[in-house]
Structures are given as structure tokens and as C-alpha cells.
Image 1 (tube, helix red, strand yellow):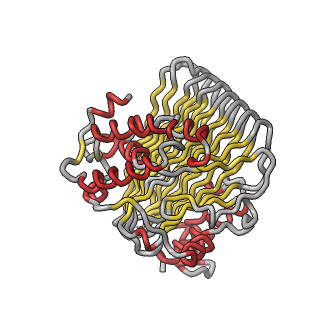
Image 2 (cartoon, rainbow, N blue to C red):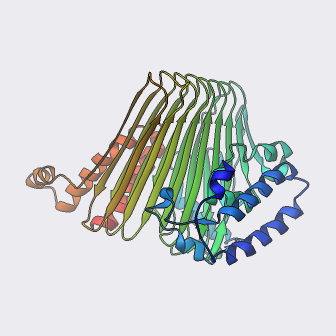
Image 3 (cartoon, helix red, strand yellow):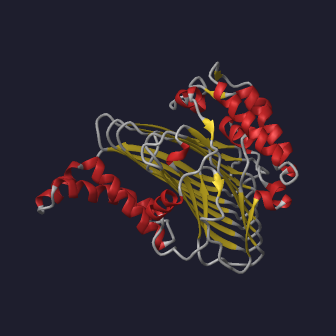
Length: 447
């Protein structure tokens, strides 16, 4: 796979800032070499991959509708400063999911894990380990090899200096969700941050993770977060990512899930902030009986751009996946959806469903949708589809005729459009939090 990546075309002559950031990252990694030694091989491999691929260009099919040139030109410096405690507290409080205040809370500040701002409660079978505190954790980070397959994943791994590992022991059920905050303060204006999270549920274990990305208003920075989700047989991970960052920021994320026999991972990706956002999401169904949910919802305005590039890979038979992405686009915003479902020849009795729907609130908004099926097995049920539309004029007229104001009627129809994705959110407080964010964003768009 590395050989394939090495042949890609790239934007050239714009990597000076990356060279400086890599040099700074090397100094940090050398200071902690004894503690992250098991990871050094993967970091070296990531640097090798990066040196060959550099930044992708729109000549690549996978980047045809998203131009990363602004990121390539930068410049960005490796984050080294952290904001004030007051600023961190304000940003976290603003994004806190009500009802989860007493749950385990892990906070990254400007790319680095902050024990001072985190709260790790006692929960049976739950272990939270920082990269620098465990050589065993270091040996597992990057095991899903995202850095071999994608340029930004390679760069994020090459710059890696911190990570938090969340693991649940065999048969344990962690009732309270684990909240993870990635906070970028005003101190990291012009910086690149690489927060990383590793979540593993052992046999028959269960855990819920709610990850929030937030940034200081107006701050321009580059965030390269990476997440690895791994389940053993019969385990369950319910994962939510809420991205509501500065609309001047760039966010290129990798989320990879690996599932064993009879396990389930439910992944929800919500995108509300950022100037340019890309979610590279992969689900690897490696065991028979595995079930996967991969859903997403984007709500954009002005010139925001969100690209969801997904892959669901059915490797073993008798597995099931459901994928549903919806986008709501106002102003001159643009959405991109590129979703692939691959079914190996051995993966008979696969059941896979994929859907992408877009709602355009403006004549200047647009969407590029590319659903794909790659099926090598012959005994499967696989469907996909994509629709693009505007608010239903008849439904809008009906609501207006009942005395409902135009803005309220539009908001009602948008909420109804989003409800199908929200219906699969099993944590009531998270669902209420997302609904409140949608209402807030719609006020800015429709007002």
C-alpha cells in the first residue's frame, strides 16, 4: 500500500513550513525517546511515506473536489504555547454536553494532553493512559496503519508527540461516556496541532466516547487529529465526533475502526465549523457477525467546505453496515461525499446500505456526491443512493399558511431533514447538544 501512495501527484515547492515543523517534532521526540521507543518505527515509517507523497493535489481522484493548497502553502508552526486556564475553561464550558459533567473528561490543549484540565473518575475496567506513561500504549498506537495510506495521516504521525489511550477490560461496561475535548486557544494562532486518541474495547466490553473539537473564534490553525477504534469479539464502541471549530481553521482528520467477530462500532461525525474540513473515515469489518454504523451530518454557511471520504471494508462473511451522511448547505458553502463500500470475495452474506442526502439552502451552495460499491462476492445485499434538493416549497407553504413565520418554518424543515441521522444517536444528552448546535447555526444562516 505504501508503494501505491508513493506514486501520487502532489503540490510541490510549498513544504518549507513542514520541514521546520518536522525538525521541531524531532527534538520533542528525542527528549522522550525512552518512553515512546516502541512508536519510533512507525514515526520513521510515516516520515518516509510523507517524503514521497507530500501534499495531495486535485489531480488525484480522491481530492478532485477539495483543494488543500491553502494548507500546503501554510505557513504553520508546530504548536508550542498554550492558552490561559481561563480561556480553556471558557471553551470547554461552551462545548460541554449537559448531563455529562461528572463523566470522565480528557482535555487536549493546543494539541497536548492536559492532566490539569482533565478529570478521570474511577470506573470498573476503564484505563486511561497517556503515551508518555506506557510503553505498551506506545506499541499499539498506529497499529491500524493510517500513516501508510494517506498523506495527512502520515504527516500527523510524523509530528506525533502525545496521545491518550482509552481501554476497557474484558466484560466491563463503562456506563458514563468518556468526553474528550480538543481545544485550540488563541495562543496557537498559525499553529499545527496533532491530537491523537486510541480506544480499545476488549471482549464483550462496552464504552461510549464523545469527542469535541473547538477553537478560539477567528483563529487560523491546522488540526490533524487521528482516532483509532478497536473492538475485540463481542465488544461495542459508540463514538461521536463533534467538530465546531473556528471558521478560519483547517481540519483534516482520520478515524479508523477495526472490528472483530460479533462486535459493533457506531460512528457519528458532526461537522459545523472550519474553513476546510476533511474526514477520512474507515471501517474494517474483520470478523464474521460484525455490525457497523457510520453516519454523518454537516451544517455549513458562507464559504465553508466539508469533505467526507469514507470506506467500509467487509473482509469476513455475515457482517452488516449502515452508512448515512446528510449535509445542509447555506451561503456559498460546499460539501463533498465520497463513500466506498468494498466487499471481499470471501465476505458472503454481507448486508450493506449507503445513503447520501444534501439540502441546499442557497443557490450558491453545492454538493459533489460519489457513492461507490466494489463487490467481489455474489451472495450479498448492497445498496447505495444519493439525492440533492432544496426545502420543499409545498411543505413551506403549508407551514406558512398555519401562521408560522418563514424563518421558523425553514428551521422546522431543516430539523426534520436532520432527524434521521439524529435518531441513531443513542445518548440523549448528546442528541440534545447536537440539536441545540443546529438551532444556533440555523439562526446565523436563516437570519
